[in-house]
Length: 87
Image (tube, rainbow, N blue to C red):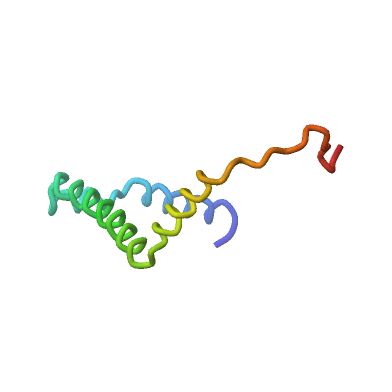
C-alpha cells in the first residue's frame, strides 16, 4: 500500500498502541500496592547486589585506601609564572 492509505494505516496503528495500556490489565490481576512493592524490592536488590559485588571484588577497599592516601599527601603547589601551553 502506497500513498495516503499507508499513512492512515500507520496513524491508526500508532493510536491503538498509545490507547492500549497493558498495565491496566495487570492492575486487574495484581494490586497497585504489590506492583509498587515489587519496584521498591528490585531497587533494594540492585543496591544490595552492587554492595556485595564491591565487597567481593574489594574495589571499595581500593577506593577508600586511595582516598586516605590522597588526603595525607600535600597538594602540589604550581608556580605562578608558568603559563598554560595554549596561551
